[in-house]
Image (cartoon, rainbow, N blue to C red):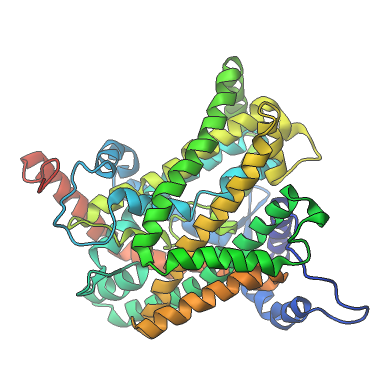
Length: 512
């Protein structure tokens, strides 16, 4: 069973990426540095990944248990909160635009900035390549199941981000620390389970640090390098065989942003994410408007294929790619990463940030991924067997907008950069939770993170990234245990807030 799961993930990884960038080959009979590192940690990584990605057969499809763990949480929480993901979307949009902001509230960033920072870690190659892989494997019907997964994920985000804001720690200088580490420890202590909470918090933090170095950093810079090489001459590119140069440049840009902490990250992502999304969505809308007459047929193909064995199988694979295999392919609902960013928001009402957070999976999966899928289906590029992943999406857009593949390459680099700076914050908060919030601890993490950026562009550390991917998914294990136990806290916060809005105690633009 484990071997089947590994084979499935290997196929997905091969479809999503053309392989890691390598350094100059070693002499005959001599192993390169990255080969020796991979061989050393390979046995441990394979065992760990095999456990995390183990699967069970469901209607003839190997369904990874970790995915079932995450999807089940979304479904149960959606019913438990009486479909808050759909019923409170209007209120969520009003909060994002600042209707309930109070300048006197504690925190570091606005609701919009917190949302942008979290989105920068989720919008990326999953929207560009993941959808194409899902449709290529399962047909247009795969899109339907990705949307369903996104809708349930909205509720998971709501609960975990409400808890993160409620149990966050605010220092005297105004710096905020929050996330699963804090609500696992403090929240479970309030429930009479201090040892369990403290243990789960440490486990989560360790996995988060590991994931931030690999999937949130090394993989990102590696993929960005490949795109830059592709548009700057391939083997003739300045960076071909000299990945460390690109790594140093990226590390420099990353350092300039992360030195300023979440406020600096939020300022950058607050501008970068809307621009990236606007360009991508504008291109998709242009194509869809030009093919408006074909949209009904495309929707029909998606719905018709959703319940065929091929559609369901492809949909599950799509969900795996979209939500759980790569850091940038996911909305990360249930993983526990985004709550770390959302906890920094300026508010004294924890539930307001939970409501803002539920918009993440909606924007990432329901809106952007659906647009990508419609473009791919309408242009028919999914029927071309020689295309997969990002090449399929690029061909679909390029079929109508000839110059778009160049824009797509630039977007991949920007998506990778925004993901790096966001994950640096996630990893930093987990690192300082373990070692203490000291200047030395913060500086040491930032130096290590930037060093990993250079390594990621220089070596083919497949096993390192495989381990970090497994670590990111493993974050959901301690996180969701706490979310299940503390879900009543989030529901009570919501009920209280809605009651005070109804009574007039909470009014629009408080304190303004």
